[in-house]
Length: 135
Image (cartoon, rainbow, N blue to C red):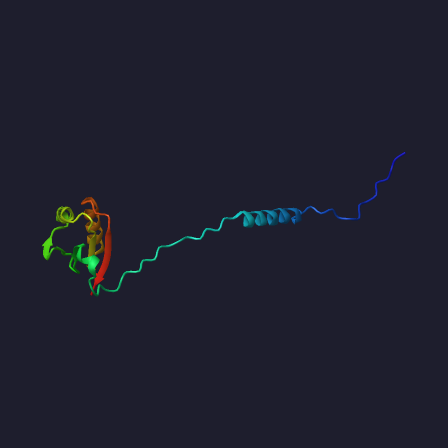
């Protein structure tokens, strides 16, 4: 006996079911949000002093280095080269070993000169440095 074929009345879908993929993507999104590391970058704010108004007793023992707007360096009321700062600091700190260095920089003094003076003072053996600005 032969069986008769019955015609299919319903259409089968040939499309792709996107529901499982959406569930998978949602799970990935939740996973990445939970495991994300939120980094807060820290910055350094520098507050420069406004001016140097008066000397007190401790500053009179300090070795004063002045940096002018044009980049000139003055120690003991005489202009010196940036490479001579080390020798002058060594000479003055030999007289008073407990003294520190007070760097008086004008407002528009070049930063590169200031950094070079600090390096030369460190090479001269003095690590007690105080900064101030003049108007």
